[in-house]
Length: 70
Image (cartoon, rainbow, N blue to C red; front, side, top):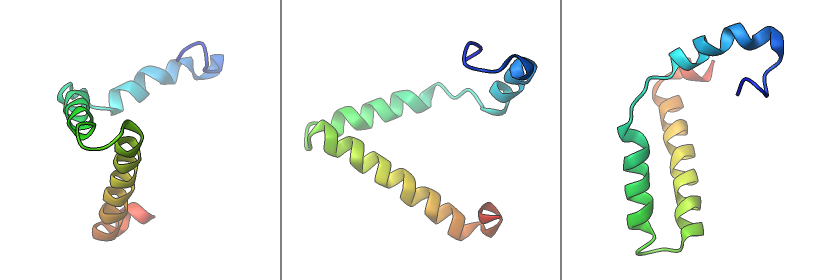
């Protein structure tokens, strides 16, 4: 990430990483669901379904929390 960032932004990168909480269970849960989904659907359809679900959850959150839309 440091290679792709302009030199004047290098001091800000550690702050960006601090904003994202480290939750190691997240990727494993996603891997489990994707692996289980491929038993029923093809990999492409599982990826598409995951993307659609992400958009749907983001839309729902925006509807329930009007401050997110601003």
